[in-house]
Amino acid sequence: MYKNCAFTGHRILQKDFDYNLLDRVIFNLINGGTENFFCGMATGFDLAAAESVLQYKKDYKVNLIPCIPCLAQEKGYSQKNKERYSRILKNCNQSFIISEEYYDGCMFERDRFMVDNCDVVVSYLRRNSGGTYYTVSYAKSKGVNIIEL
Image 1 (cartoon, rainbow, N blue to C red):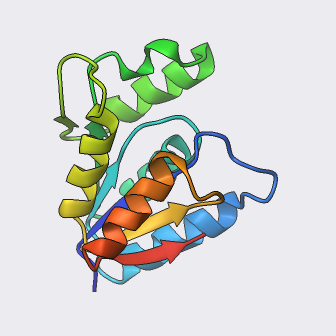
Image 2: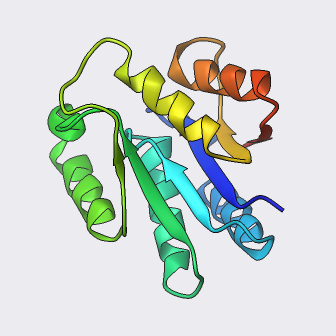
Image 3: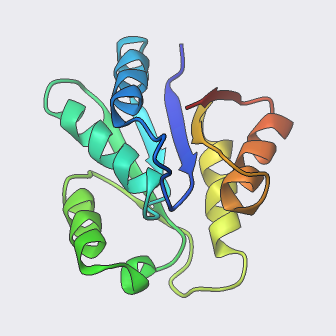
């Protein structure tokens, strides 16, 4: 049983991305006892995972916990993604903010925070570089279980 789950994935979802698979994995985690879902709130995979968790929040006792690397994280997002980001935050009971201002490395600090506070990571990893690769590698080094989509 995993009590706490974190998400990590690319900002751009490839054509092979399966939203239904993501929903099924989250549903199975909830049925297995997962209560807390940590999300980095980046565009792409993170926002998709957050929206999936929120659809289950209506019927199950689960918490979506945004882990925000810096205030105004969404500043460069498209209008649509800014609206999604805001809607997600409004439906969460708590969040963690790593830094009030952006600094080089705040995203990696956010990623380490999520891994350090979870039992399992749900990952959408398609290349061996970047933040998702860093986070999955960090999770493996800590012995955290990985569910690869």
